[in-house]
Length: 375
Length: 187
Image (cartoon, rainbow over all chains, first blue to last red; front, side, top):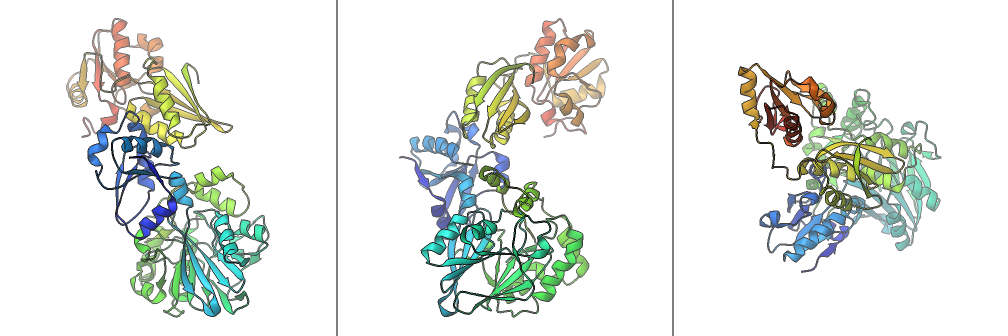
């Protein structure tokens, strides 16, 4: 059998459709432990490629004979080497084209809602890293929220839809991934909106997002309402789109809540976080549909691959919204926090415009899962 | 770095080539030698570290210069399981020696920083690279237990000592990789 390439988009569909898949991950063990292709029905075997340079004899017994095997590595070179050996042994093998690097950059586009007067809401699901971004289409205009650095995807999609991008928002200063918001605004002439309290010594121009303001997108009356919800960062904003969809940024997720420490200010911001979750969101209609800027685990995906749930449901089920005791809440979000990757500081500086790393460095900085939540 | 025996040029090559080349080039290099691997693939650092550990080589360090990386490895014996020095003792055996005997010395031939991190109580540090010059510090009438991380470098060290007329030399296998600070074997 000959070795075939599997594109990240094919893999994304398999993950969303919960197809069974056997992955032979040939990266080194630390890399695999830190971060891998997640999926409900995926079986894994991790054997570093350098243990297989002389042949795959030692692992053939651990591989399925008739099921397809996807070989995965960091960039694809090693998975091709190992995949070819498997093919020669008669296995049904493919390799992940572009490796984990491409997987991390893949955005799966999912339409999540029809808005009034023919408007549409799309969610861009970055499966490999758990980042979510959004595009609102209205008339011949589009607004984008929390764009990733893969700016082509948004610009191309807007072109296909025949709309021009007029507004670009970041809910907050991201620490886990590099924002594409400013680049898209520069490229398209759109207005770049940024929370002023997160914009301490930024090097670029932006329009400050104020609390409780309304913005109309396109000819129709689709409304984006801003809401001050500090806690993950001091400037974190939420948006209510078309009076129904609540974009919570990194404050509230489906199965977890935002962590307040990514700028090293856990103690200061925990009170803000509590206020945003237990006062500001509590005051909203439970029928609003929450759409966060991240997911952490694959279980948070709906059957169509989207990430969205009614606020009322989260009020009942999300543990982070159900800690009555303030002290307990404080210790939950400030003690035992998951490790904060070193690159987070560099990413923040890049998003503030203080640093302009090369594309290769940007990729390196973003490697691994996001760690924005506490459960 | 001084004493580099071989330079492997893997600049501009993507994974898996830096390790494929290194592995091939290291085949004919004497154990104990230092190999410099030049690479531009950022992933090569973690991979070389992990590979060296498994292959029985010692990863020393990585220096970043301009856009390229220089990795340094100390070559282990060709077959990581084959220790040629005939007199060996396992970790447990060494523990009983420590508990009972008195006329012996433990020589730790790993790098100084590894020794500083953890070592057997009372062990002396003589990194393998310094052994030849510092051999005179050791007494011939004492039993010398030589220890390293996995038993490879100490095997070479034991042979070197025997060649110089040290008759009571014993190699500790596997050594510090399995040494529990509380004593004896970890597993």
